[in-house]
Image 1 (spheres, rainbow, N blue to C red):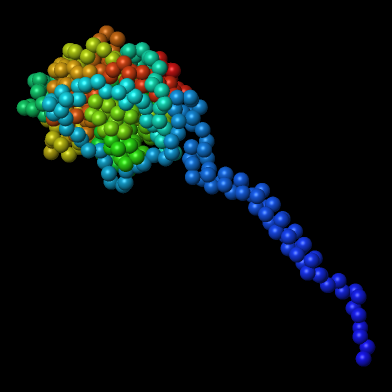
Image 2: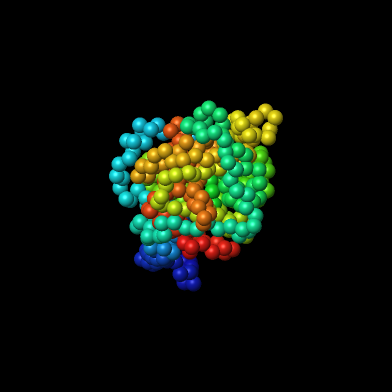
Length: 387
């Protein structure tokens, strides 16, 4: 029997097999080590909107920082009209931490920002601006003075000329796709609507409470679904720690920065003043559409999302609150309390609480915030003194 030797076959030895296994394992380990930073970075960025998304105006500043994503309320959740008694207001008239005036903001894509240093000092008052000075419809002399939310006769008169100044700078605030509003506000800059904090955030609890998403603003809305000056989209929200974190009524104020449009900037705006809050003042806003308004043009007397205003005089000035006897109802939260002098109309407080008719005062710290928020988001179509 002949034995055939296949010398052309190079069969691997046990040693060669081990070497090949080691070589393959080494390549796999090297590849894994090279790819690990890429995978880790990708996962980290996906989880951190502050890193993964394009920088905003506040990211480019040293006194604000992104802290994550904001919490929003669910569908159908709307602002609740709060009540503040005189006794509760008196208990709140104490010194509060200065840090409670630090700003809290959300960007158009839902990022949450916290201010890390108080806003720089700003003028204590600003001038109102009316781009069409010949188109002014002055305040009517309202009726008998009331002494309550709506006490005795309803003295509010409808502001019908809402394409004229100043009524076109008083705005309704509504949910997406709604034709009737739940809050009010006033333009104090070319795209900057001053309102109550509870009109955009539930107040207190920080992330446990939600922001009301995608509010629409109707400057000079003139009836249900009627927007003679257009319906404006919100862009940024601003409030302060005292409201966002603590839900404290004396910090119940906010600003909605609108999408920047020439049609908005051309409406004009009110000024503001952080001193001299005694004397006669006015307000105008949008009570709930289903309430009764004495001056309503509707046959059933419902307010129907027309704009109504009233005048009265200051009843009491506390450190951060102002008591007024102008007639207001639910829906008029966020409306301005404003004074008139030779220079025009200046906001001194924001209607916030029914029951005792308390308004959140414009103070020096709040004037600083208004200016800072306007400076962070100027308009391309009009200049403001704070820019």
